[in-house]
Image 1 (cartoon, rainbow, N blue to C red):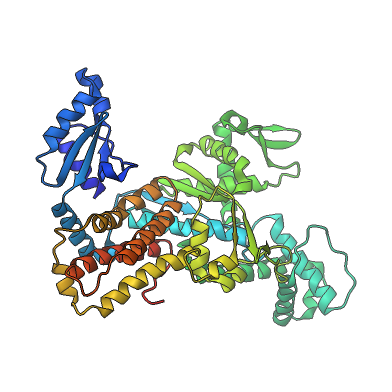
Image 2: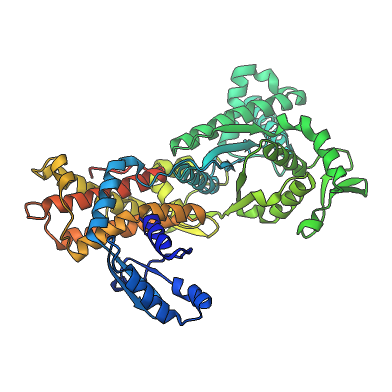
Length: 529
């Protein structure tokens, strides 16, 4: 609807326009400040130009009323236009708001948690945001590939193997062991040791030479568990890329960094000249022992990504990686690529409560809250909605008990209740689907027209949420639309009235926007409560 109105105005005025929603609904459905930009061209006051344009637009059949106010042009849409847009929405059904392919390929990397333990609640926020961003982007015509980067080449994998080895010696062989301070803790390590003993025999814990094999064994099992945890909330990746598999490229990557004067040697180390590209200082990429650093692995990975020829790249990282952005972008430039094609979104940690107290840490995980535990407590739908209800770079705190309430304080219940009410009315109505679909929307009351308008702006909300990487806009929209519906439902009788058919048609558009909106957040809309 937004684009149709914009095209009408631009076709008549022969200039680009900005189209806004007036804060005061009394001014109409849309407004444009185009008179202010035209004032410089025609050397007239914006007020006078706005009045002239309003007069010119008064004969447009899609507009019921056009007025000028303080240089702004306010537009109220005609009933016939609403009729046309509602009919098109219902015909589109689950494709309402869907756009044609844009021909832009985007590689979206997210989660990428080290496969050294189960997913915790902090990982879940970036995972859910990345998955929903991908769903919305694909719906809007972008070709998006979701990718998980497996950090399987660093010291953390060796530490996983050592942790399993020590657990096996202590718990299964009943040997006295000395644990390093940074070793991995939690019941899952003991579980991995038990499984390793069953597969290889207890003799695997007799020699330190088995640590590398235990590292691979533990990493593979943890990766499978991560995949299962993600699947529980509806997340499936297109690609998994192993860091270890990319190290064969290191020689070529290192040489190209040198060719572009991106590295130098000092103190027996190799440094990346990242300070030339906005980093606070240069960074070591090769240690004194000639071993590549953690940063080197990420440089190889980004070279691999950019070599695959996508139009745009998005990384979703934890907020603790903020200082990492400049050094990665520096490496991309030194490799001969355009770093402006990489966008990094940061995801803040989550504070979780239960009955007002900090949520209990998982014994299995040791010292953090498992995503799986929270999903088991409140369900995937509630978790997804609450994580998407705020921008990922802002702090999020919530009490899981609030998401179990069956009232308006629980947003996902409130939205689903609106949808279920609509479906209940449709079931109770004596009218069949075709009769409702044929109903005229002429003569709608002001409240009904406002409800329909709010349902029809859904496609524009989707666009803005993706463009601004602000999926909370969808959550806010769905809550507001549900509130508008509940307000109308409580104030007006619908069934067994002369307006039954047309109002059920309006309600169907409301239900459609709710259902499609929730599905793009990875949530199945409920039709019964």
